[in-house]
Length: 576
Image: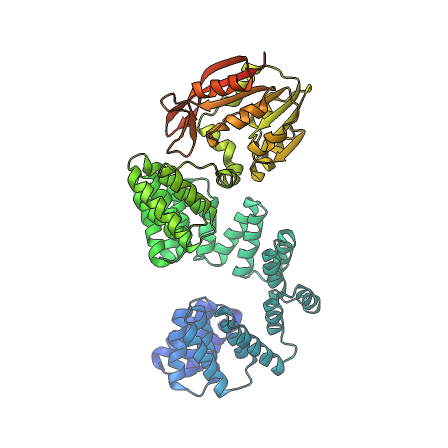
């Protein structure tokens, strides 16, 4: 086949998008004329169209050597450099293209995109505006400027004017999603991907379906992405996260890491998977890889700490949790992890735990948990535990009942069995999520729930069993306690040491409550778990002093704590 015939056939394949056939002919031509700048450039464009940008840059660079005055070659090189993540190189190549040919509107738009990714908003806008001076009808910089300003009305106006441009509804979807308007965002994303089945558009639609908890539709979209780009790490990670079969899920994670070994999200998600599979040492190694890649991300330190805690390495876990908290001081999850781990460490090395708690408080004197843990571990009792208790239960509220099930918590039913059917008004002190109310409620009584935690009360309200819910400290509430047939305090006094004023104020109402018992202490003591236990004789003396004459005691197991049963007593006290 002659050179001219071969070139015409290659160009035909190129125009038809038959890239492999075109590349085959380009290669044959270059074997005889290896420095042909036009063929080198065309080869780069074909590779670029296949997404092989790294290889494309080689051919564009060779074309530039042969013709350094071609603005087109510099532009093409910059385009592939940008997609390889070589931002500085792309910037220089775009600028050189414009130096050779100052009226390339696409180059100005591309420069605007680069400046936008580096958060140089002023330069981004300037380049978009320059592109528009060259062509006022150029859609992309118009959309880019509207996106920078989060201008939804402008984007909607542009979509009406240019209904064939997929980029506009894609930008709309991004902004709407950031504004938590998920349904509207999804509709915009679907309009974008119907206009153009671009990988990014399909990924956004898939993620929005995930936001709507429509996993099966999201999975179909991620599969469509893989059909376009089998090396889409984002699609692979998401499919792995949704996969019920652990063997298949792991294959997806490993494939993602084979494609991009330095992808931090792939390492984190794979580590989470291994943790759920109870493969702690493997999970630990994945998180360590993630730390190497991005040592500043606090959640990685936190997740590493969770594994170390599960492995019983409390010292290392605390170091990681504290590191995470110092990076993100307002994160309550990290605070709770430190508090829990300090308590675990105190079981084996109380002195070390106390020193760490004291150091934590010194560095974060306004942190409620740091202050309280320092008191607990250094055996400094405090009446000022209200803020600590409030924050503690606000954090646990959503998962509280699951946690109590794991701890074999059966106290509500035991109390219900002892009291039978109660009529009249019941005041539930420290009602929490309403576990007691759920077993005591009937058509002949009225329930009043009192709790210090607004988050707990929110969960209790969902049960629709309380006639009244009140957010208050129970010590304060009892100062003006309304009439009631029964007052209940189930597993509440673990957070209150001195019970004198509460018992005195509840009298003469019938009173049912529980305590964790320790008859070796004088009256009550603060344990390393952060809870109080009480001497049963101390409690009975208070009941008698208040005026209760009929006092019944029932030995019981309150819950499990660190695998061991917590022994307690249920008291039922009546005036006569």
